[in-house]
Length: 395
Image 1 (spheres, rainbow, N blue to C red):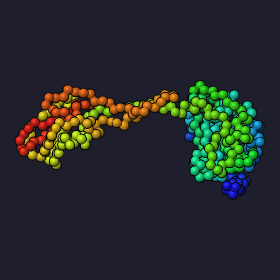
Image 2 (cartoon, one colour):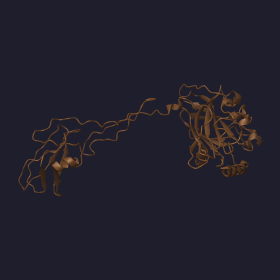
Image 3 (cartoon, rainbow, N blue to C red):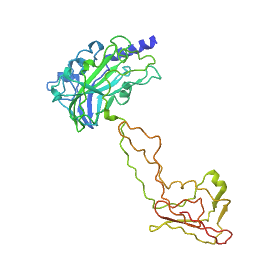
Image 4 (cartoon, rainbow, N blue to C red):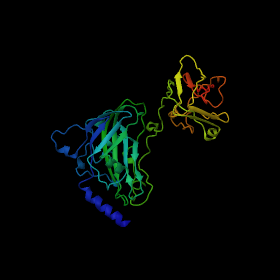
């Protein structure tokens, strides 16, 4: 265990100089916006970008647990607000694109929002009140040190997407996006926080104005999700405040429409029966047998026809037992109905519409389906030893 920890620590230290990274681009509702780059401080006329500036971040450094009580934990070291804003619809998505991220720096990814009192371009980090809208932690620990949210970010081309809650009130917000690297978190002050702040303008939405908290109250140096050895089997607790309680009521689903199509035509079919009924009644058509199926839009009719033929045989020992309508006549793949907020799912699937019951024509034995749906006339022709006898109609 110690050897594994030592090797991982050396790899992490080797990557410190060249790796880490920062958010260089933001895609809000499909529109790209340039993020902040530390080198912009050396430009004579730096562009106005949506990302907060961090002149002290030339090394793509981090904020440690020993400074959790300072405003640096909000948007990074001495960060100042961006001078542009990315417009996004409530319920829309924001994608945050990192320049890179080292695989050794495993840990959770978290997202917060803070509403600005007016224009976010004049906001100050210490006055922002954040509420958490998204987070991801340890996904799978079957192989130590496990698969983390940071690994998902890397596999997604070093990008992370977050959905803006659709119920929050429109206005100007600071989106705080953060990775916490835990490769050295087994020792005191070993965790590394990489906060990045982005100005966004939320349009549309509802009327929710969640109460937030200052970033200085997010974490403590000895929190279970901050002081932790990831090089062992563990159940990880994501640090920080609870998620915004509404969060779109994530379990809510929209009601699907259920459409039934009228039955206008039927291909030739043979009645189906259970194994038990097959022993009692068997109809065996030959290659020359014919089954005529037609529709009648004015009335439901059953026709008995005498035809001289020797192409179909009928063996009956007892009346057939009706076991259901032929396969394919009715839809059974109706979607489940949705439920409101907090609604429980039904344990039973919705039932297909029941076929209307029509009077059975005289002379038709049990075991044949009742007429249903659009009016259908079915004519079955058969004979035994070229002697015309009444046939049974499937309606």
